[in-house]
Length: 104
Image 1 (cartoon, rainbow, N blue to C red):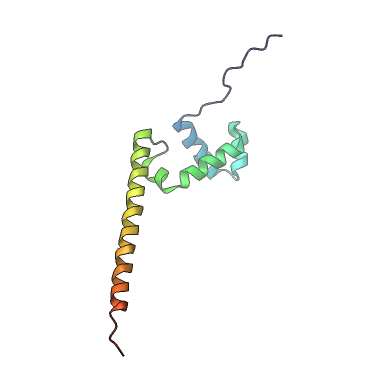
Image 2: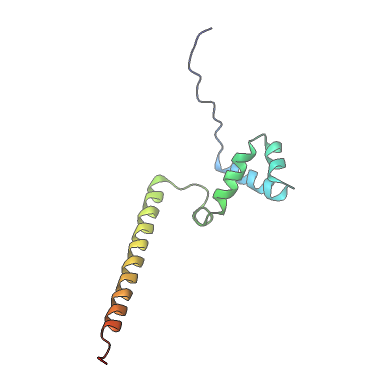
């Protein structure tokens, strides 16, 4: 027998199939039963359910293109930096207030 490399055997699922699978899992008595009915791995269905529950996925849909995902990461980093700067300003003001106590 020849040792030829096998082509990629992964099945690809489009967004419509995923949405239908999630709907079926929601209506079914269990996600595992829905996965058996669709002939897919239950772990994959659980992953799709988890991904669908994230705020980004719920707000923007099932798939983000790489450009949008990169922009989202940049905006989140900017928001974190601004929040840290605001905290630092507040702490500086608090130090100034408490360090200017009258002499006793």
